[in-house]
Image 1 (cartoon, rainbow, N blue to C red):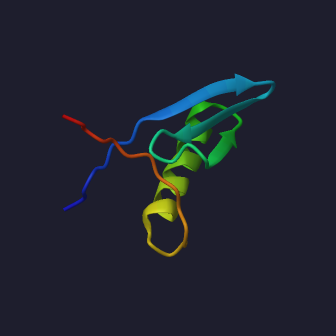
Image 2: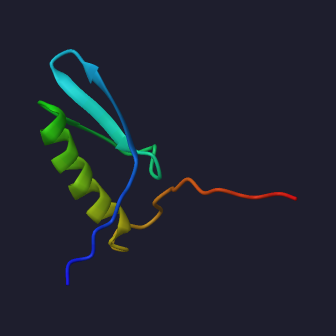
Length: 66
């Protein structure tokens, strides 16, 4: 069974490229020649960042304070 993960991302056009990052990992940017290409790079980036193979990955979390 294939498990589907969802991850929000932020992107913009910068000249001839689409640039973006995964919202959970805002320090790690990538680019593509069009939006579909950018999404492919973001999927690869997500796999790399969540693999556990890279040390020191910075993430964004959420804290609830009562």
